[in-house]
Length: 108
Image (tube, rainbow, N blue to C red; front, side, top):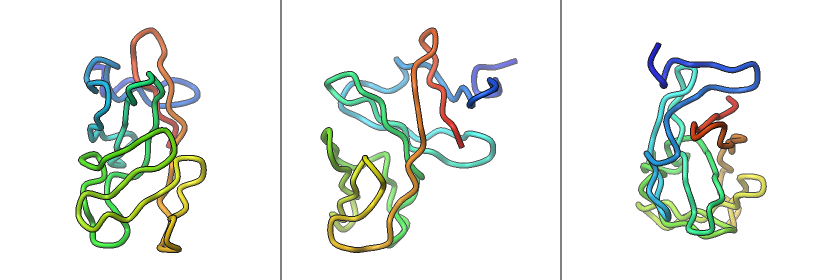
């Protein structure tokens, strides 16, 4: 079974931590859902839906810091804490993500 097919009782293994360089995001599929996973420079992990609700922008290509994610198309900003938009736009879905033995485990 490949790493992208593995499931745990509390999430789906989508890849390895080293698949996401520090300060960047990557798109994975978890349980048939596209998820953008980010590894921040401080080592924290975040996950959200892969497409921006505004115009379908690829959120994994967005800029991020410890508080917000910016969509690369129109600079809509979303809070990591709850997925809400800083401008009142449609919120994004955030997913719990963690590292388990070097694997990225996302709850969908």
